[in-house]
Length: 338
Image 1 (tube, one colour):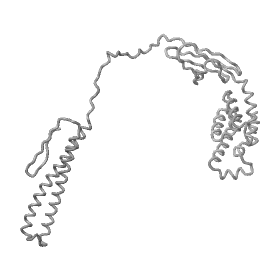
Image 2 (cartoon, one colour):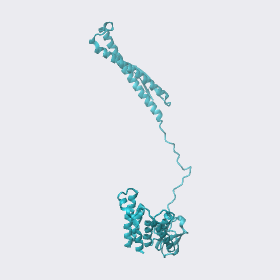
Image 3 (cartoon, one colour):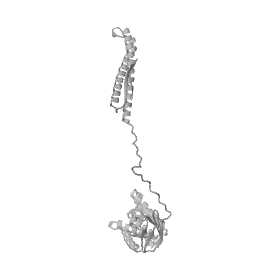
Image 4 (cartoon, one colour):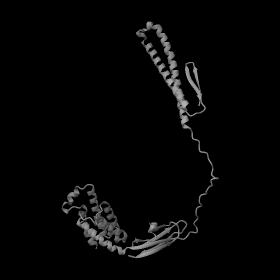
């Protein structure tokens, strides 16, 4: 039987490529993308077949599975099923045979070898069915038990229903809170159906955690919500103070430079009869003009700053605030509490 399977794989490299033998080598030299995956699948299939012929079915299954991931040719999937059947994995082998039939059975354009693989899969699927066993598993006792067979989870919906199972030894286990673990070991023969019941018994040493204490409405502590700072009020006041500061500084600068400009104007009046200054006074004239400009800018900035501060202060949320203007020698501003 192994020789017959090996003969089928002799032509696998060219069938996976899907090209005639005369052009296979030429096309392989220019293979890119999808073609590279097919070439890799071919190489892996050859390696898997060597392991299969050496009766290393575990290795053969692993490498055939890797080859199938690259290119799911029916010839590769069929050999994967045969590797599984040789290990007694009849359920998985049956599923892969069915996969070949489902994916390639209606493909009229498939190569002849692929069609042959489909027919072989049909034949082997029919032969596997009477060999597959079944287990009807039930659990008694416990609430929402967790059930496993051979460390694989059994869905609650599958309890009480026959489920296919491979022949050989198995271990069924059920656990539930407050109950001792229930376990049953059994051996299933080919084609045999067994009913396995797991009975959960309460664990006398189990101590349930007490529920969290419940508080009545009267016992609940009433807490005032934390006060939320009025950030809007604080921001408005801060901006108002900043505006007053800038305005006051502008007024001070305008006043000081204005006095200096007036002094320079008085000096120039004495040295520039009729308003015409000689060239020797150009530096003094320039300094006078600069002081005048700075004074004007200072008064403008001061006026704008004080006005903006007043607007911000008046439009901020109501609070106890007191503002007092003050005028001093060379100074002008405002003081207050907010």
